Length: 152
Image (cartoon, rainbow, N blue to C red; front, side):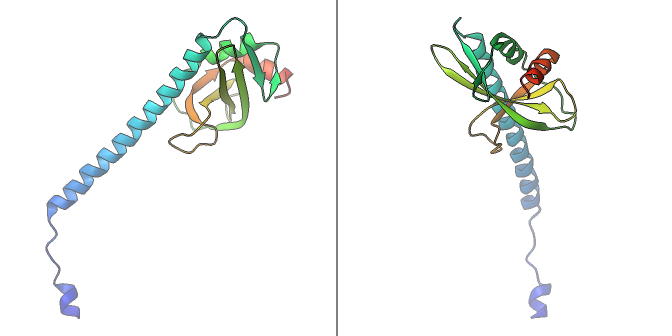
């Protein structure tokens, strides 16, 4: 039995090279898909808020708000911010409704930066994140003040 264990079949080196290359391709593809998903969510949300009809309304957590213009302006500022090792906190659900469609948006205040919000397009996503597809971040002190007045 020991003789069988000592006599190994030669391991072809090309298998190791192939495995390393396949691993790099898999990681690269994952990052590419993740980046594309973020761009798609970002473009979708900006397209929706930029094409609103004049008679839109905004709800936050199911309640109509009087400053929909401030919410829309904040969402329009959605952009990319480099990671700084913080995370999103409690989600705030925004619904924008006009005569053509209803658009759901989720924002969540950053755990370290008071005026920074993580933006999401709710729904199925690559990471199975319950908030949705990450779409970028909003930095807006006016939004923080308004949400504070709403008790959020």
